[in-house]
Length: 115
Image 1: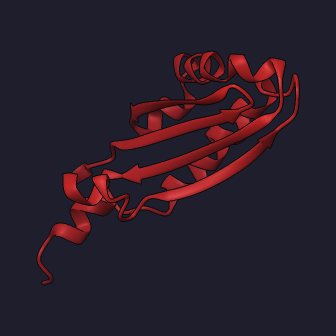
Image 2: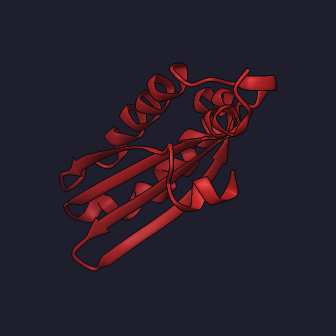
């Protein structure tokens, strides 16, 4: 399963164009997108953890962060604040935000032998 994650096998990605001063308004769309993606994933044996990889590309380079989360975290203020802190540098300029979700339950499902 780790090899699948390292190859981004089964990861679901999305991008947003960020305008100057609009990064704070991007937090809820990112959380909503994650919720939508995860609602369609399998969770065998209750495996509901997922990785959220974010990369913000801007004039000064690229900033990235990896979040290890559970679906309930997407409704938690702490996750929204952490995401807002990651996006804070985007307030001063335009850029692109790329997100990729790796659902561990889907990876486990693919790794299980067929019945």
